[in-house]
Amino acid sequence: MKEYLTETAKWGKFLSIVGFVGLGLLVILAFSIGLIFEQLGTAAVDQFGDFNPGVAVTIFYLLFALLWFFPVFYMFKFSTGILKTVPAMDITGIENALSNLKSLFKFYGIFTIVILCFYGILFLVAMIAVLNAA
Image (cartoon, rainbow, N blue to C red):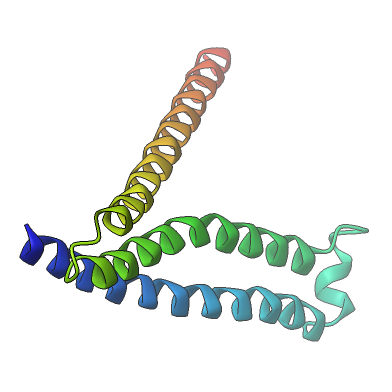
């Protein structure tokens, strides 16, 4: 059990660190997109009227980064908790680390349900559109 938990935690720590780096790059990209739209000049942006696509894309990327933060954070907390507590067999620490793993899976489960519902609604809207067009 100790070996499996330790190896799982090592991979989880690696993946969470890569996730945090990806989050940092995503935030940098979010703010860069706004600057790119600004550099395009008013001719390219004026076609949208008062709507600023650079700001909209920046907000979308920041919201996506916020959404991505939670599973990465839970994975990191699980991994560091396991790596600290398994060698000493600190049951309370292991329980706290496993609680973070539960939260990670709960997040993915709820996210999956939301996405499946979204796809279901999209499917229904598409079917209604096809039936109305016919």
